[in-house]
Length: 392
Image (cartoon, rainbow, N blue to C red; front, side, top):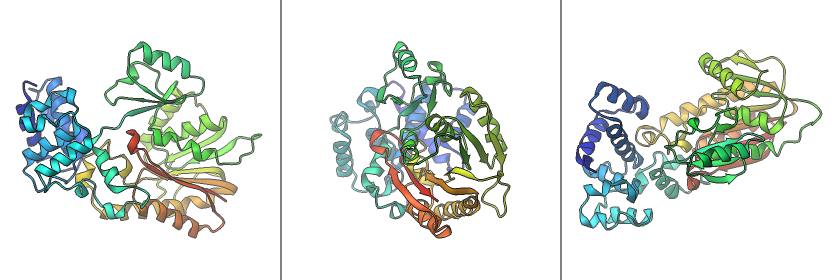
């Protein structure tokens, strides 16, 4: 790689100036817009270096930054990428080896590199998650996952194969593709496929545990709807339903309306409300299913935003759990007798998951746990989530 050393110097300068106050993607976009000398290839290579560096968290914090960058590059990059030109023969000889062997080599060369420092707040991680394996998984870029909508398997598979895009068929409803693929140029997003992480798609496993009256439409309230992926999943799973979505941001609900139109969903109610505040505005009536995919640390998704490994602090966990408890307290009264509450996060922290489950049960003793699970995805280049289904 002809300009590898120049790319490295540029990346070091960028990360020395980055303070985590905005997403790294936004910071890089701003930096490159202010520095027009970088072409598309330059931007791609420099961004790769920055993200590689973020993926080791604070494991190299006591090592010189240029060495930490090289360690990160060595652990994150594949043999086909050309970065080995930055290294001496001793490192090159290990370049194509398995990640475990490469990591052992790094620790032998630099004993100050600590795997325990890759992921923050490890003492707060649920006992269900193997901390070391989970931490190391952040060296690997997660895939993009598609959820194929009902009846779209043949058409979507043909479109992807015609475009000669490499993909892995996880199931007839789930395809995995490399993160770099511009899939929106190949398939009809929202109409035929939903871009949705594999673990998020697995929320349907909890839908399958519900006993519903097939003769009437389910009354659904997705109380923290965000982009609406799980709402569309519920619609595809259950069929016709009376749908209500709410979010704190009116702009999100505006975007969600456009997405629902692309997905063929014409009838729904939307409410802009802050459910974390006392006596919030709530939709009228009671609901058979309330989905509460609450705001959280997002710690199960940091493979996609690895800058969080260095900038997330423990005090934020308490901030999120307080928010989650407030939301739960405001929505429980809207559940019908015999209704279901589905609580979920994309966090691996016990305080946001098992502890909130206990809080929910304490708030409404009439609720019983139907199923609780971690949707562990890191071994499959996917996110890790938590979900628990309650029945009233």
